[in-house]
Image (tube, rainbow, N blue to C red; front, side, top):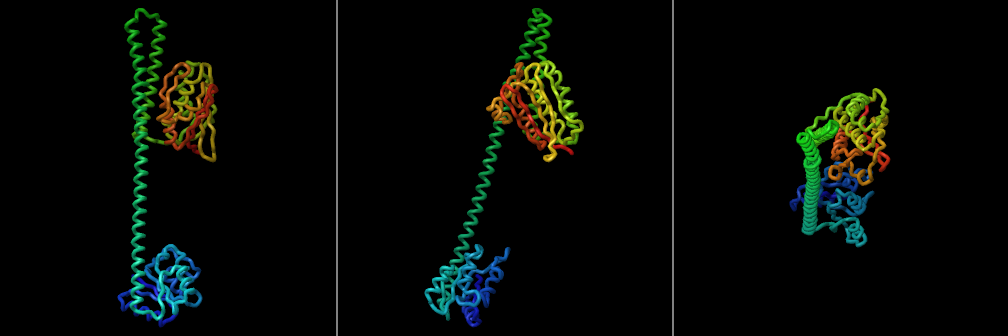
Length: 400
């Protein structure tokens, strides 16, 4: 245990040291002034604690009367620093003046010794103070251990909470997956089977136009199944982390035109006009296939929920400050109510809605859109008024 003696008297310093050494205390350090003693403790002349100072003092014996900085003042200074607060201080006084001793105890001293000290009395008081310091160190070690255990427990609880959230999401995803297979996929397949069975069984009874009409319905249903399966497979890959993310630089105008050519037949059947407002050479940096899927789903939804002879506007806007392009798909269709709007991109609460011509849907396409946009470091949102139409917006990084 390391003991620091601070006394301006050479005789008193060495006398105390000799008594302590003879009682078995080998590590005794001396300082001839409060300033020197404070320096040993890591406090500079500006009374500032030196960061990273390695302090190994376990007990201080402090003379109460010293020039410049008294023992009482030095005690106050030492106790003002949290890292030094627990070091016991025994005041050394030539008298038992109650006023001085009261001030010393108020400053933070735990005991006092009257000069010249009695060897037995000194030994008992020093050992008592060191025992107190040892107990304080043990208590602080236990408190530190408890804090560490609490942090570990908090981390475990946080990890369990995260795992629980992931488990709930996995269950929700599973439920959605089975719902799509059992309802959204099963029903149209059943409709195709029944339609074909009816055609085969009663073929001679149908007129040519009736046959053509039934075949068109079967064809449309099969296209819906194909679109659903494509979304389902892509969504499944995102859930398992097996989808490839391959960003590249390309012209946004080309991406829009490529997808419009695919959607033209669907739009023409409902006599819906699609207007584009996109600058040529709008260069972006993202995964072409993912953003194509996003755009195709949004255009399909707009056609689905727009009445015949309606209008869809596809536009882009460069935000040079954020370095993104904002793509908008706007229609004058049915619009979306506020309750559905709040849950549109959520896997557990999204729901399918039939289009203006009773087109089927699963609600999966918009969830896939959100995931693909976020993978490409973008955002997606929707603005809609029931009966007025909807505008779906998303951003992707621009290459300026």
